[in-house]
Image (cartoon, rainbow, N blue to C red; front, top):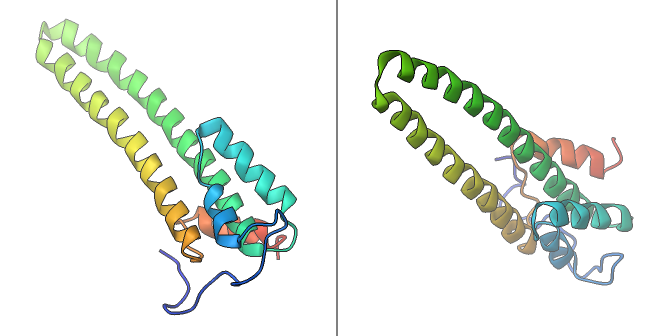
Length: 152
């Protein structure tokens, strides 16, 4: 992951956010909530906070994380549908229930693991934000930093 050097806090300590809370608490709150609420909370913190780049960064990163995870889940759902149809046709053509059972098992594992990864990422982001660490997720972290700093 792309993090600042060890021993250097990323967030200015002692400052308050525009909402009157500690920056690490405000940044952590951006990672909390259910999917729709999560995006709304992140966007509220991003647009309300004008001064503190640490809070703006974590707010935007949390929103981009949800968008990226949602996009991955949509793509997986489409691929899952295609694979299910193809293997259902193959299973009926060969009169074999093993193929259908195998596809069902793989599908079940995928749909159990993806939400766990999503929740784990939110927890990790929230913990790092609370620890005053500017932790960046791969790819979206750099994009969030660019957006939070005004595109410079």
